[in-house]
Image (cartoon, rainbow, N blue to C red; front, side, top):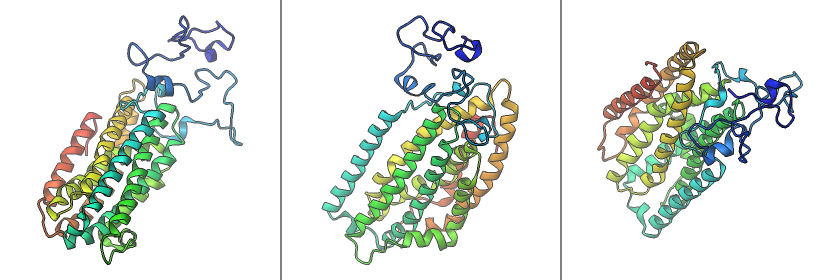
Length: 352
């Protein structure tokens, strides 16, 4: 491993050899591939670390003496926190571009649907479901997005924080999309009540398991536990089941071709977030020094949050019987969820 200014005790020119000491690229890290990607140039070592380059220790410290970032913000351990690279290669510019494209698409779908009078053709029972059940789900998305926003502050490297923060942004965008979507189609439907979603989330017994699961994640003090619980456990067992297994498959059968388009981006979001999470957790689970300890920790998270996600999913089962047209059964969706989480955990060497 090349020497760093921290290891030689000097920041003078030529005192240490870096990855590109002999080039004009001014890069201080080893790229994952033969050449550094734009994503790596924008994220790797942007966040300082006394173990790498800050010979004067942290520039900013808290009153208790702790530096701006500490490894103890998670119970997981790593031989090299800087090894992680997000598979989706997303950084600030690409993230804003992607979010903008999604918002343009969603708004276009809603505008065109309203111009054609599509909301008025929705099945009456489905209109009620959108107000209550989809209106309730936006609170779950908002809670998870808020949790990830908190988690990203405590990650030890910019690469981890970037992946966590973009994940948060996706969740908050979806919560906003749902809110605006329901408000806009509500203007075309008589008797529409925007408050039913909140009432459902707070009072409907079917949703209290989901509330418990989400609020438990929000209350966790370990940022990697929050990241793990959301993408490895909650999403395959509850999130995908509700979005893909209910909304996207049942909407069309009830004369609603708008909702699936509004929700569809969230499924692509999750695939990116899942890939990032698996990559990070795989690194930690196979760490040469701390792998066994991390796997034991992760297995505990699976048990804790798996039980809450199971309770949440089973609690939502009655929703599948609410529409007039029921092309998909809850049992089939649940079976797919079990298969999905089995595959995800298998990649990490974990079990249900």
